[in-house]
Image (cartoon, rainbow, N blue to C red; front, side, top):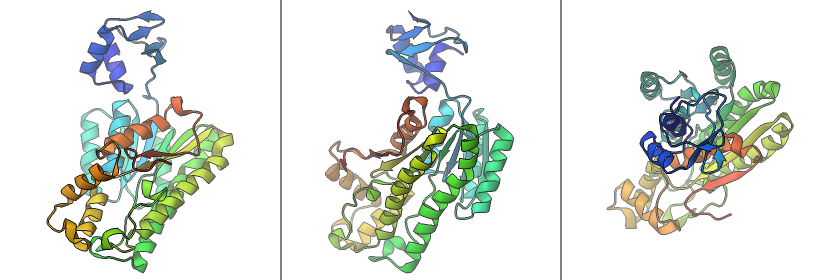
Length: 328
């Protein structure tokens, strides 16, 4: 593999940018500076960029739930660009099919299936299929989530169905997902689990603000549970060389946040003339020290780091990826 492609696949930079970086004497191969982007990197070569060793994850198998869009899709993009094999599931069969076909057209090895994470048997069956096809599961990213029941965005306060759906997907679905992979990882004495939670599970902000009521409570509580589950699972699996961490995104303009923006719009007259993205942008610029919103890909890069060998001494942690919106 050409050196510029090797750096690109390892996540250092795009291939074009890698050409520039190589010619700036930033890259060493086997202890010597290499200025040739076309140098053929072999498995026996040791490649260092800016003094740090660079490794591909081509032999890794990554299992992602809720993979058809948002953070799940962004994570699949980042892992695939770095050479991983993908196992993807989602409840939206049509979008998942499009995503799968796109990866296949780009030469990515991928297995996908429509799955409801509240159905434990479906997850265990899919894990068996992944192992049958790829031989293993190295990385698991439980990302599937729910924010409320039907018409959530039009209500001020929660109803029983909001608690039922957020608990069944965000808590029980999470446990189902990790249960479906942990015995395999224990047997291999190796694995990375990176759970997608939320900054709202760390320190809820704005609950009940501007007349919005308590409609977000079920979602926030479910994400706090996901963080606590991360801690307990890390303790349980640490002795088997399995790292368990969670990322806590801030405001990202995904389908979830569009529903929150619609809720703001319907409950707060200050936002009545604004479209959902304008509400999103205004809040991001108001609340975050970095004065910008996060993109799904920003979270995906953090997921990829926690799933890498470089994070081998990190476990049981909840990492805020929120532009400084919450600082603890």
